[in-house]
Figure 1 (cartoon, rainbow, N blue to C red):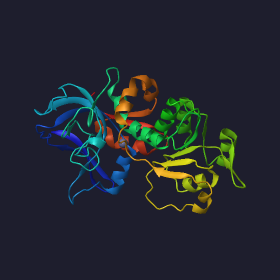
Figure 2: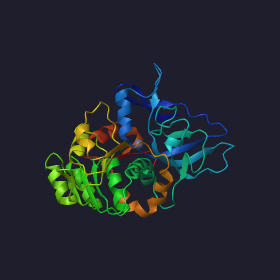
Figure 3: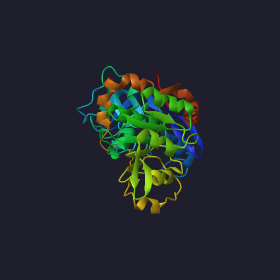
Length: 337
Ligand SMILES: [Zn+2]
């Protein structure tokens, strides 16, 4: 038997004992060592699972790193005992996102396993907890890529949770100096300050438009003065953000939304007309995961600071609760370590 975290109903999630996986010739089994709690895990629990059959369960956990403990006979590029990260977006079985396997578990099966695709090797000097950050860091990097930032750009990131903080890190790593990070939590703003942002502000406590004019300068669209910010990334998802940005944005500025909006948002398209600004979205990480893993040795000291709490698998429910707290960063579940 193995422990697996399953969603049974809306708000009902349990660490169950279930049978070991039955891998085929194309599959590998990984003994999980670390798995991060993701905002989408909390969303899935609120929704009562994904594609869940009546009476069925949704196993969750997709930010996982571990050791290969079974290799199917058709799999030639993955070794027993190899230290690996799962790329869940490339798993045909959708590990932890509606498929039959989830990684808040002792073991997880990756079907049709392929090194460099759905299974990535962990660099030698990277620990499992750091390796398990690859997935949220890839989400963050994709958001930054979608913002098409270039040297000299002035950027605002809404939200300094695990994804927003990852975006701040990638922007700074790309040499973008004028990064303003926004959050309502002072602890989260402190983490952004520790990374070296230009400013970290609580948008409720300050006049954001005035602050951005001071930090990023001003622009002009017809008779209206705008802020000088080139790109905005929304990793927070508050209903006022789009409208606020549109009303102060400069000519041809860009905005990327990575936050999950569950309700429609009203936006002032009239104010947007004259700016020709672009609003787009970013989801997942179609290409970014290998680059993230390759960057880990260079960034590992910074990455360590992105994990705020550790829980053993038996306390995974407490880990989920901690991830809801606005002061937490990445909450990491460790397994059999
Ligand atoms: Zn995730």
